[in-house]
Image (cartoon, rainbow, N blue to C red; front, side, top):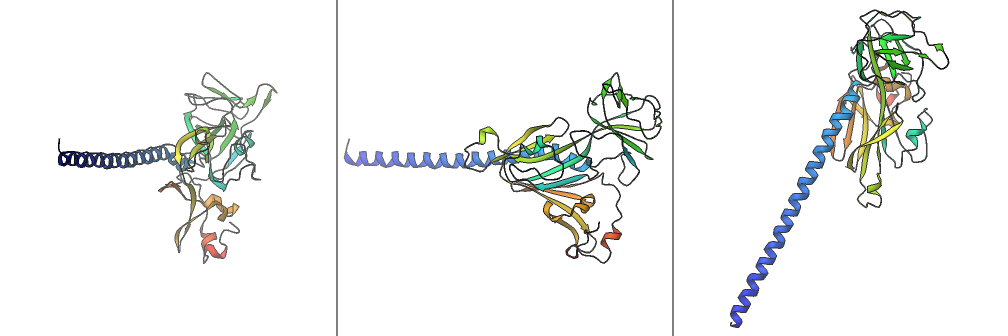
Length: 315
């Protein structure tokens, strides 16, 4: 073999190695792009599956209508959730600190990083109708089907004229008890209900960022999105690979249109007027409208008024 042949062989081998290296780089970049696209698609699917429907149905108080407003009597308040008629609420979390808004310690203890936290109140989880009329003195509701209802759940019964909220003491054979068997004390309903009444199980949830054990020591600043169930007092990871979780709340100004604000920019008395929620996860935005927002007389708050002038100070 001559020197020329050796040099040609080395050159061809070098070209093959360089080609293989660049081919590997192209395949690697394509794989990473597909992996990111798949991850974003999975995140989007879970956001739309969990967060979206619960935002849209939060603040439910009966009749499956948007505008009906009727009194709801709180027969008993669940121990796991502060009484609240706002459909939605949010704040910026601080590790080791529990805000002075009555939040359960079981949730505050799980906050490990600075992150937006959104709370969705009174989300309907199960529906049923009565199998027999109910008098205020009766200790239970006989329903058509108690599937999806459980002991300790927050139950709403309503007929579009009035409603009662109570904590289910027990569930047995399609019967939902609203009195404390141990103490033998009855929590009376405010009125009688006919067969047209609706029985709904409500629950409240919170979404926030946390760092699971597998991310400890991760230098990429990745987190997981958690869903906290207030009745169970437990949090469950929804999806990982989150680098950004931002929540903004939409208030409608008839002059300027929809204005989005962070939680700390919204006065306490303006939360009942939140109409939309915009959630940014990584680089993608999702916008949801609260369908069950109860009627609010906005004209009194918006007349000749701008946000910067303190429109919501007396809302």
